[in-house]
Image: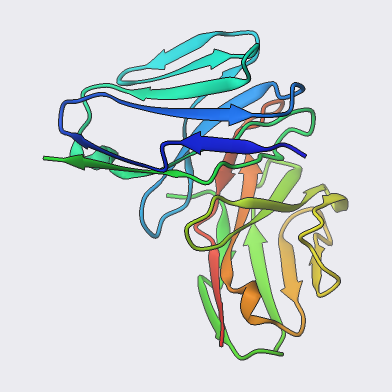
Length: 112
Length: 114
């Protein structure tokens, strides 16, 4: 099965700083690379995703970059705000779409 | 704001009892997924349906677990003879697109086994 690791497990930044979370995976057949955000007591919500034919995707303050050769992809958040504080999960997926393998999560804290 | 409804939202039960959770997915999607999330961990895939057919089951789904989707609409997840290790959030999800892996999760059903 897919092995997924996220780093760091916790990340603390000051408001306005950038945050980067890296996800490594093992299955070379993975072709879909999403990031989910989960606030305390809430459901996981998709914030950005990328497919294996694209190297980078940006949506306002968030971006995802993919390195398929090295089997890792990263979440980049610029100009962080306190409301960005949450747990972020990567969840690569391969041939069985909708079957995601989640990382262990990164707790992001943005201090005002 | 969710298009996926789950019931009950919270369930406290004693070890050995049976529990059942219900999921009403986004109506136009023929796929439905169940995940489990324990405290401090990411969600783990349990099983999924295409219409009424259960197409894949994780090894996490022991014989005490059974899931159904009788008419290809709502789904139920039953846990028999609950154990303390079953305490978790049980999440149901619908795909957001017709040919993508994007999932829209419900708010989940939190199970506490005493």
